[in-house]
Amino acid sequence: MTSAHLPTEPSTTPPVASVPDPAATASALGIPVPDPELAARLVRRLEAVDEALSDAVASADALADDASRHLVSAGGKRFRPLLTLLTGELGDGSRPELVDAAVVVELTQVASLYHDDVMDSAPLRRGAPSVHSVWGNSVAILVGDMLFARASSRVARLGPEAVVLQSGTFERMCLGQLHETLGPREGEDAVEHYLQVLSDKTASLLATSARFGAMFGGCPEPVVEAVTQYGEKLGVAFQLADDVLDVASPSESSGKTPGTDLREHVPTMPVLLLRARVASPEATDADRELLAQLDGDLSSDDALTAALAALRAHPVLDETRALATRWAAQSAAELDPVPDGPVKEALAAFATALADRTV
Image 1 (cartoon, helix red, strand yellow):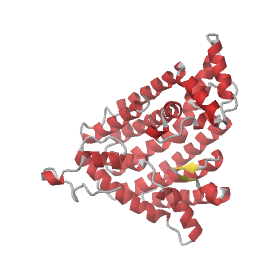
Image 2 (cartoon, one colour; image 1 turned 120 degrees about the horizontal axis):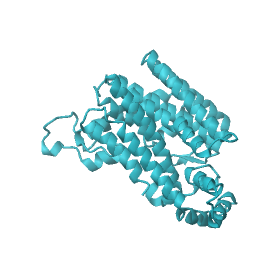
Image 3 (cartoon, helix red, strand yellow; image 1 turned 90 degrees about the vertical axis):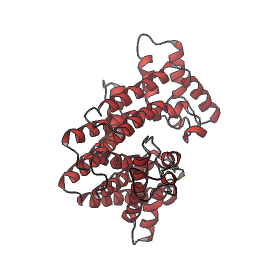
Image 4 (tube, helix red, strand yellow; image 1 turned 90 degrees about the horizontal axis):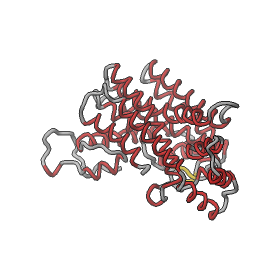
């Protein structure tokens, strides 16, 4: 990130030459922040988070240092620390605890990716070779554990309440991964099971990210609770939108390789909705044929391309879009107790942007 176009200090009446470039700040943040002064502050504070994050993963051991820095240096969206900084702006966004809190949530996210990539045998992460593909599974697991330890050490600076919140979030993330791995129990609704997996595995950390920001920004309890629920629903909307993008979005526009989950037969919402259709009395031959196609061998590019085209044309993709939009709208509705202003506008715009990217 660069702050070449940003003023060194925020000002309510900056001269024309020092007004932040909205395009530059939007690009640096990766989410819509309509107010340029707010965006400028967030860019600067994200830079402070990146510096603190680099310090937090440093190790005297050369192998541990290289492997720990691997994904941190690869970048990523930094959605979680950004959400912490943004909700912190509802109070006093300059408090130093917010940087620590933002580092904690990003360390937790990165550590979980080290473990996820081992379980999924993922060759790439954030555009770089995954840690396990460079150093092996054992190193990836151990370094992931080490990063969780660094997150625990950092969160201890923030007090007992933060430690309890962090440990509860970590437990939910583990449960989400466990339930995703095992799948629904006999008689359990697969769609509801999947939504709970998304809530635990992904949304829990977004909820804590938002909560940490409001807590350490000094916001009143109703605002803290509101942004926590916002983050929870935002996380589900985010993953549902990803399910749509895995099918519908060209890789050159989304940065995602379409069909990755389909090829690996990873359960996603469009396929789960299709399975529910096939199990119902209203199932058509076309539904059954598509499901058989998706359950078949998709290792060849031709087979995957044909499956993607068929799924894009099926109503279950629009149903998934509608679900993502609904969860995003529910997320924005949780902001009612939040004071009006640039921060609330940015939070609402973030939720809207999640829904819009599925179109």
